[in-house]
Length: 196
Image (tube, rainbow, N blue to C red):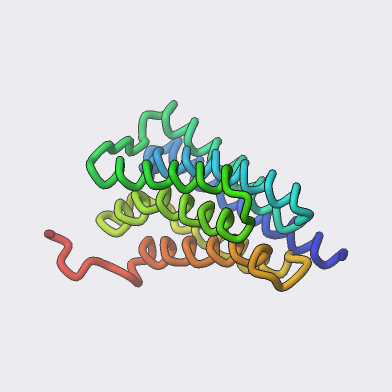
């Protein structure tokens, strides 16, 4: 039990510490967060953490609470500093709408596994504008926050109390998503033709 708590706390610390350079880069106008992603994540992670705690998962939910604090801070500060990407192109609207639909399905379904999958899909749809933006221009993101989020995802997996789909799915998804964005920022995954 103590080890679950330590991994949960460590994963939260990595998320929050990783966000500090990102907030500094927002202040220095070096990054341009896609606000639709960050606001969607803020709402989703707050609900996800609440749902996980209501279902008995405590320490595994700490990464979601840490993500909520960070995503709200990034959204608000990027808007204040006027460095946010507030794109409302066709795909941005589609992905955000799909995220909202996933969020609604998650809240209304009385089937935990389907609700969890809906929550993960909502998170992914909120995050697709950030993946697309970063794929097109990796310089709009700070590597450190994604390194720390990826490490946090690894630690969150060790914070689960039981090896079940319900406990592992969200932390594993976060690890996968953050890892992909990190690979994009580090240009390990890059556009084959940057002029397109």
